[in-house]
Image 1: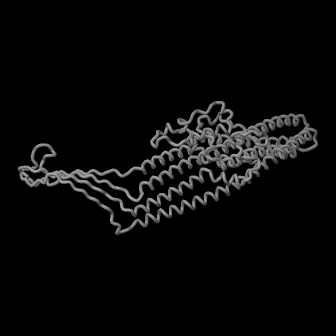
Image 2: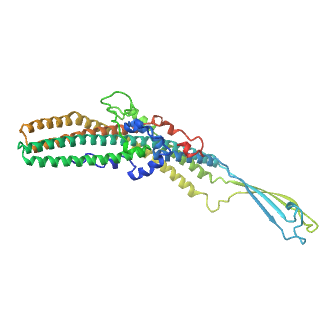
Length: 475
């Protein structure tokens, strides 16, 4: 039998096994240890609860938010004054520079302070752009958390399916082994042809090969899920609980959110909720940041003023009677826009605004199209599961049971019986796979309509208390 879910471990998430090993061990320090009860019976809700503290993408997004918060502080800073200290006319006196303190020596002491005064609202526009970028980073963190939770839910469903396939195939191998032993006794007694033994052995070997493949898939998914929730040291003991099924329970649980109804319809309420999703709001904030950056570029045409204040101290003495004493000078400088008037900077800023606006509009269109796709995907997954659970598997089981009895009475041959057994195994695997696909489709539908306040790990969205907070404390 072919693998009914080929490449599940590869499609389950962005973390490869090798990457998961490196990230999992590094995150083990930051993440709390997964309780033994959760290791042996991990629910989707428990796995998603750890995303905010342990998922590498969320941690990276949180670091980006801290950096954006620091940029706001930087953008609000006025230019520092410049201090210049100099000395001149040090060889003008025939008697040298004289004795005494440094201040009374005979040379020109120069002390100058320059201060740049920004005009045209540059500081305000710069601060507004940084604030919008910080808000975009906060919303990007919320969207990263949303997607990471959906990815963990998908990994959890895949792991449960893989482990359920291992259990089903283990039962099939055990039953096949018992049938093979019973058949060998019948052949030895002359009640069955020897060719049947060869056919049963071939079928038994095929079932064993399928079991080994399923175990390999389950192991790979254990590592991927453990790396995503910071539990890689416990990966080999990770056991996924069966995802909640809305067709067998009416409870509202994290696995069955209200937005993931049995027959979702992307109506006006869903479209309105979609507009409030974090990724779309982040795109809107990036557009605002680009507009404020354009204001900064346009403000460059307003000349800044550089004011300077200089004190010259040139003491007079017997050796240098020409000393001028103390002199106070004031200067003002402005740039002369004779080469350019920042046309390039303004044009680039306008291009960035247009790009951000197009990205925002495109994000809205793609989000709406994806919502429609997810609705159809969930409908198809639910239909597939109902067919597999209520028609395909029961029919295959009944047929296999009937042929088992008929074979014992000599009514059918071994080929028909073995084909029925293979069909029964395939039906079991199809039912398990369909149930997992339904759980993943429901998780995707719920994630598509999840807002920042709906996150399973709301503490992960808390803004940083300080732009220079320690990473360990933030995590």
